[in-house]
Image (cartoon, rainbow, N blue to C red; front, side, top):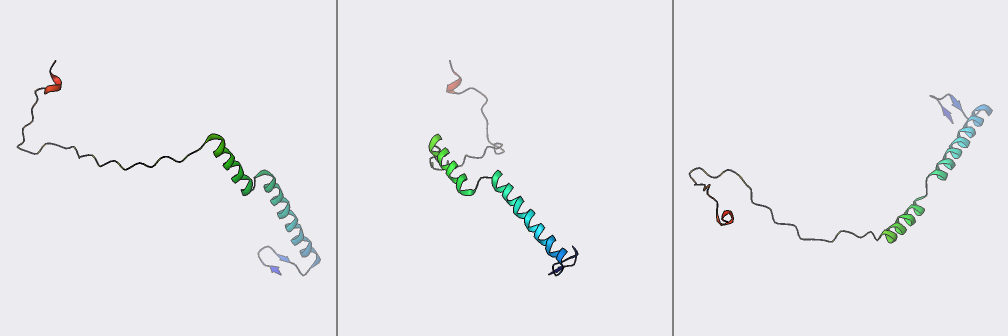
Length: 90
């Protein structure tokens, strides 16, 4: 294997050693990440226990509300009363 951009030739002893060192560092980095980040299985167990502990329930389904009538200007020619109606009498 010859990697032109990196100048790494695995047919030589130095090239083989370099490739092995890259593998060692990749494995080391992966091990560190594994120690810091919980695995997916553990994460799912933790989330399930939290859901039971705090009784997380989905929101109840409800019917959608009907659309409200659009409010706008009165049509031209219509009359608007400015006197109080029954609610305004005391």
